[in-house]
Image (spheres, rainbow, N blue to C red):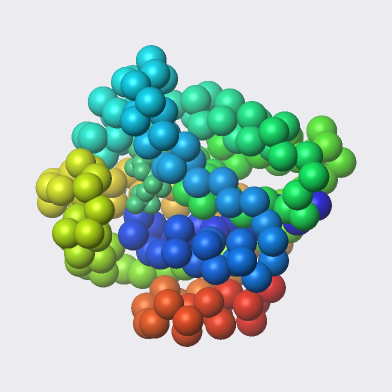
Length: 187
Ligand code: ADP
């Protein structure tokens, strides 16, 4: 089974590109952000706790998202593979994913990192705030917290996958189709 990770800062376009990959390669899309927003909408206890963190621009605990990933893997045994979007976001999550996959006799196939700089993160998310109703997109100071958390907690994941020889980086500036072509060229 294929296991592709779409990596990058908030607002890099991971969700958009994941949708294109799903269509082309018939993979199952796992977005931890979408899964968490679903819990929030459903009003579960997990959703209530997650909302308090997400709305401040902080990450939810590793164990929470790791549990969601394990659940998604178990729930879809007959797919060609998975595309992870917004996960792993910490080195601890990357280690758990390796272990979950090793237990299945599988491994991460490749990491595709969509790179944009902090100023573009800010302008993309401000634009998205006009289209989608996300509380974590609505306020510049929350976006800046997310950017800071990305640098502190998520960026170290790059070194983890570089050491495994699985890391590929592409420029995330440009048109959606152009960026998709760049992804295809590294796969
Ligand atoms: P974006 O890429 O714009 O930040 P996401 O939908 O991926 O949006 O994530 C929204 C929020 O959900 C994050 O800011 C974080 O609070 C939480 N979240 C999503 N994925 C994870 C994860 N793997 N680990 C911890 N928190 C997460």
